[in-house]
Image 1 (cartoon, helix red, strand yellow):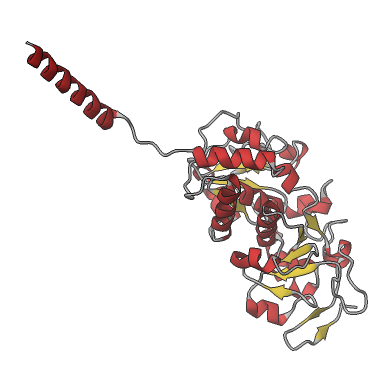
Image 2 (image 1 turned 90 degrees about the horizontal axis):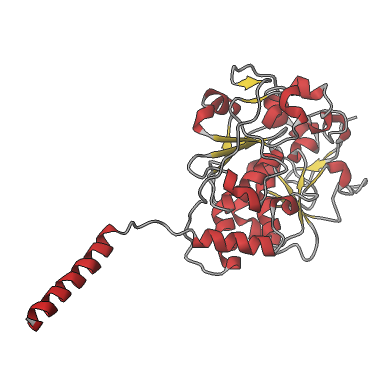
Length: 338
């Protein structure tokens, strides 16, 4: 009888162990996400801090009137080598965005100014630098805002565009809570997880989305309109968009859906690019609408209250406001236009 009881107990124990291993769902852990959020919160790396004074127009960086250098900054240009050779700021160094952390290590204590074509890719680079502790800034409008010879990308993309999915009526979508994203770096400490995520973000190439793709397929994205509520109806918005602007912080990440590409748009694509970088680091599949509302309602913005956020708008630090000399690879100066 004792042997029978022992055998029954053994069989029951085996069944319970087997059942536990078989039936327990295997789900990815979000421990790294939790550790990263806690680390970023304790080190003042919330989005409002990352965005604090992050962009500077060419007129605000102390350009030398004699040779058009920027002596107070270490200038890193992340455009292609070919375009850098055609025209760049004197003493600028060229680097790929994927190597921006290594390039920044050579700044020797100077604040860093990052230049690209339009200010959008540089925004991602500066976001990464700021998360890693570098004193860094975006050249507003990129090299487009330095000299009209280099302004082709903004001149051709600041346009008006019609779409039934760009509307001026209706309220923002109602927020709800979602699960947090999951990712694995293999690290356990907050600082190491952050660096791994920053490097992964810098390697990402599909972060920018065209307005035509967004407006043709808004349902493919979780869309966040990142500008003040007053602009929601005055300039319009993407149908179905949320308006999580002032509330976009570490504490409110729960309102973002990690199961869809998370598309952010703003006036110019510059703020949405640095915001998208921050979200990518935190494990979201971030996307930024290139050129922002300037690619859809440029004329309306130009004549509105936010002209300073418009290419060639009054006070925008672009066009006639910025006209500085640049150098080609042979060292030849191309002076300001008369």
